Image 1: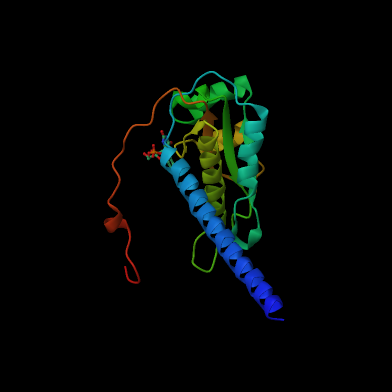
Image 2 (image 1 turned 120 degrees about the vertical axis):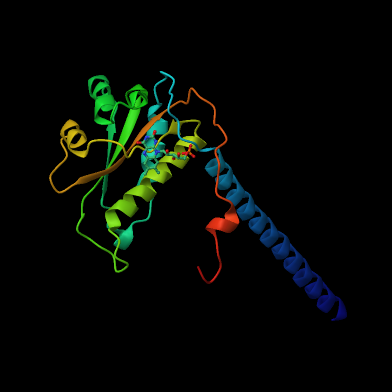
Length: 203
Ligand SMILES: Cc1cc2nc3c(=O)[nH]c(=O)nc-3n(C[C@H](O)[C@H](O)[C@H](O)COP(=O)(O)O)c2cc1C
């Protein structure tokens, strides 16, 4: 009787220790994964010089998958991602982007398009620009993770770009992301100190 009681207690004790170790491992893994994302965030920089090397289809698909997984207000997913990798179309990107030659140099440029442009959230912000920007940054970070580089492009003539990709009237282009293998190293850039950009509970 006493032995049975002892065996049961030992069993429960082992179960308890086992679950604690498992929990600790899970927590450690989560912290590690968080750090891994932060590492990618730290690695990312605006790439303005690309190698001629093509982007592998699997990598391009991974970029688009990352975009597909982005959150969007009301889950509207207003986006359409147009990949410009045709040689003749690429040549025209320099002019469309106000002379920024590196955009034509990139083997692919992802054009962030969105509809539902009338939808304004309660906070007063247009959802489509925010949704598209989040999807775009998913792309940028996934690119970094796979050894690719990108650069956000806001300096482009909207209507010329719309013509190039046959954009329907109910869509707008939020930004462009030329992507390719970087032919340049990351340089240190100045960041505002964290105390200046963060506060708790009150502005
Ligand atoms: C919305 C947006 C638009 C931008 N437009 C351009 C652009 O047209 N051309 C360019 O060279 N860089 C552009 N950039 C890149 C910024 O200059 C760059 O992100 C900033 O200087 C910080 O440098 P980093 O990206 O290397 O960290 C843009 C960035 C954002 C977020």
